[in-house]
Length: 88
Image (spheres, one colour):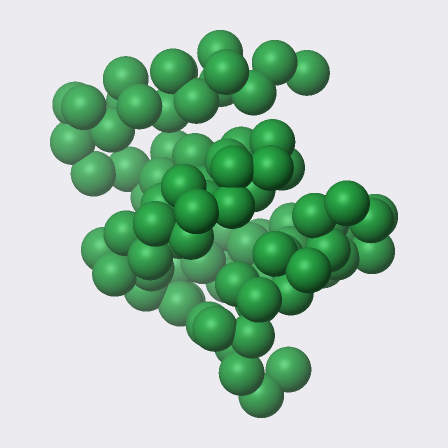
């Protein structure tokens, strides 16, 4: 619906301390809104802090797969997917 508002809310949560759901969802919001450089930076921070196992627990591969299947953000989502799951 409103990615700008969601981004603000996730940033607020993160200002309080580490939070894996907020960090990965912030990255997803940037990606889904077409802010690919910000998304890349946000995913890098999320994976650096929380790791691949936490991303998998939260369903990040499925979120990326959905964007890959739905068009305009497919190339950027595929690039992020390959960076963190190169064997897939």
